[in-house]
Length: 148
Image (cartoon, rainbow, N blue to C red; front, side):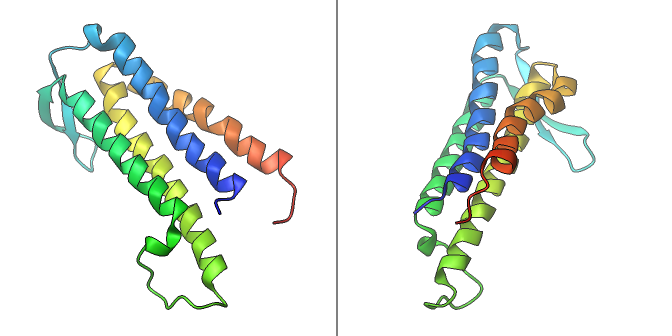
């Protein structure tokens, strides 16, 4: 069973994905034919490709999100560094679901940066991602006081 908190956290990654997909489709004709395809750890561009690669990376991001959702739905399928027994099963599975939902958020945010960079709105990236993520987080913090 997936808790409401995990679903809301996973929804954040979906909302980021949908936001940047809409921006990509809406602004595709305005994107130059050559776009940044890789940024190194120092933030410097070290790879370029055609603008069609933005849809390929979007597809890869969607595949990752689907894979993460399947693991969230069936956490027993994940690989754990500890032995799972009756005493720790529920706790370990909930922690893995939380971890996976946070990984989904970070993964989608990193993929979305490439789209924002191609649209030349990378400075607005932080603001948009903040707006898309802040509402569900505030909902979790302020309106969900039930003990589970």
